[in-house]
Amino acid sequence: MSSATTKHGPLFTLSDIIYLILGVISASFALKSFLVPNHFLDGGVTGISLLLHEVYHWNLGVILLVLNLPFIILAYFQIGKHFAIRSFLTILLIIITIFFVPFPEVTHDKLLVAVFGGFFMGIGIGLSMRGGGTFDGMEVLALLTFKKSSFSITEIILGMNVIIFIIATVFLKFETALYAIMTYLVASQITKYVIEGIEAYTGVTIVSGNSEEIKKALVLTMNRGITVYKGERGFMKESFEQSAEADIIFTIVTRLEVRKLQNIVRSIDPKAFIFTQTVREPQGGIVKEIIKH
Image (cartoon, rainbow, N blue to C red; front, side, top):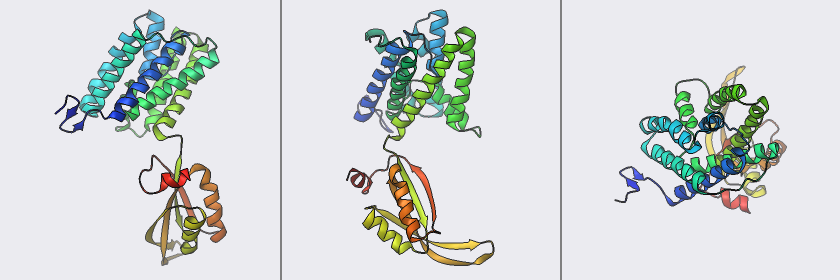
C-alpha cells in the first residue's frame, strides 16, 4: 500500500493532483499579482486573512494556515479524512507558492484588479474543489451550517461574506469594501463555472399525448438520445378519476438548444407539459458525442 492510499481508496488520483496544483498556482497568482499589492480583499477566510494582513501587517501565509486549521480539523471529523488532508496540503502549497514564487505585479488599475483578481481566485477555488479539497475554511463552515439550517450553502456563504465586508469598512476605506464585493462576485461566478462546467446541459422532461411523434422528432430531427418512462397523465381536479397511459420522455440538450426543442414539441402538441432542470457533468451515453457533432 502506497503512502497516498488508504483502505477507503487512493488519497489522490492523477487528476486530483493536477487540479490541486493548477488551483494553487491560479489562487497564488491572484493574491501576489493582484490583491495583495493593491490592498484588496476577497471573501471567506482568505478575505479575513487579507484584512488582518493589511491592518496588522502579519505574514499572510501564517494567517492563512492559522485561520484555516480549525476548519480543517472540523472537516476531518465531520466531512471526511480525504477532504481534510487534501485541503491541508492545498493550503500548505499556497503558502509555499506565495512565499517562494516571484509573481509579478500586473496592474494597479482598481477595476482590473477586482475583475482579474476575482477571476484567477475563482479559477483557483474551482480547480481545488474539483481536486477534492479547498483552501478556504468558509466552505466547510457553510456546509456544516447548511445541514442544520433552512438556508442554501450559497446563501450562508453570502451572509458570512457580507459580515466580513461590513467589518472591512471599519478598518479600511469604504471604496475598498466595494471593490472587495466585486472581487468576491467575480470569483464566485468563475468558481461556479469551473465546478459545474462552462458547457451547461439542461435535462428536459416532456409529457404529451403525442409522444410517438415527439420521440421521432427528438431522435431524427435533433439527433438526441432519449429515455422513456411509462406513466399516466390526467388526474385533474374536475376529472380526477380519468387518466391515460403516457410515455414520459427525458432528454439532455445544451442550454442553447432548449428553445429549439420547445418549439419542436409545441409544433407537435401545443398542450404538452415540459419542464427543464440543470444537469451537471453528464457522462456516458451519447451526450458528449452528439454535442461535439
